[in-house]
Length: 267
Length: 312
Image 1: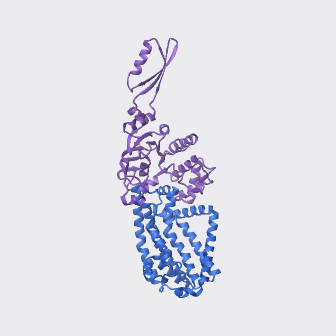
Image 2: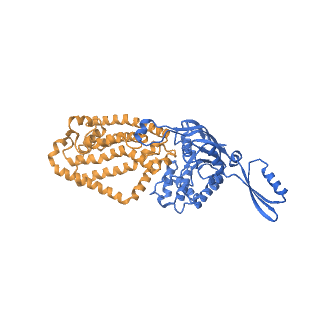
Image 3: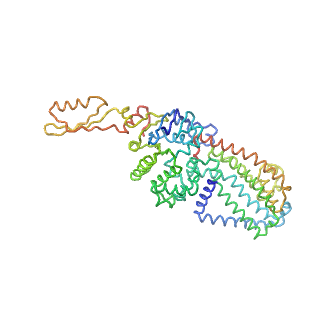
């Protein structure tokens, strides 16, 4: 806990020292929302049949996709970024000389991003609900939180696997390339999976974001119950149960390999 | 009591072919450290000398558990290298000359507070310890300035403060005076000898390429070349073993004229006595004899030459 707070404080101090970038991030959220709001107006009711399970409104659909993809991106890329940043700034060795273990160091490195992403998600939902007519009045927040929890664990596990590979290869890992590409193309961030050809829909069945976004949209936009999202939730739980231990084993292997190889701090 | 003991400690870097291909550029397969057996007494400054690429930093990283050895064992502060890495890390501090190992936009104090938390110090204990260390390394005035504005000497002193955060019994200093000017070097030497070893009674392992620094600071030294220890002992012991000649300067006077005679004599020979006898026999007087010890540099060069090593 003490280490986690230290990382949060470190990143807060560093990020707020770049004040202009901090302000620009806030504008970025507003510009993003505005862009998709106008696209939604352009599309009007033409796309409503595809979006019927989610209430038929494209802006509400894409807002959930945009907001929560941030969480999954932090999970997927956060550890690799944290590891590479520590290697490149030369601080990794100094951190590894402390009793805090390597897995905690890498995990805590992305905590600040999670805090910022939570603020961004809050901003997306608040602007959408209060200013642009997205109805979150009968959302099932409890179910949405449970879905989010297992989705975050799953994406963190993928991120830890990616970091394990980077410990060995130094740069470039198939996990983030593969799943990063799937995010936008197959995961249903900007359009529902049902608009894709049948074979791509089958591929989308193998990636966790498909289940996470579908369940989040149903719970937040339609107030869906646990029974309605049971299949999506069970698949996410299975992903988490399989990937998390596998990723921790992979990370232990990655650290042991880099220590044998003498390349722990190389990049 | 021994602070550090190593037995047959070896490290061969050999990356699997597939990983070498994935990285494109990689470490060559080399014996970086080979069969190192040595010991360091508690409370002493131990110097490890060697030319570039001798394996000095690899040996430190092995002892700090940052690299896994291929063969051999070591005990650091009584803890086994293979079985008790966490206890070893808790009892040692590593100070490198890498200026990048801090966060440039954080102040010296903020950097130290961050690392103190990773060492498990509570918020209050960390604040007190950091203040105490900033005073020890004479950085209180600059404590709240961003690290990126620090000079090389200040960065090095902050690095020492970080190494001392958890009050370790052993400090590993990897070329701590590299890039420092003479004033900053002297300041750092005083900190090591007076404060860290003199007052706090810590054991210091110092790697350096500066022979004058080793001669000035170290109780014992070892010379590492191409991964192997070529010699170890006190500087007097190494002189006795490796000095080929003792240099004498004789001031003699004959017929009212003073002369200076330079004599290279093999140790324990009677060459000096015979020379003095000759001067006296020819009617001269010996006014002064000065003996100069063989410099550490000469010993170092001799050892490397004997083992076919590179120049420092």
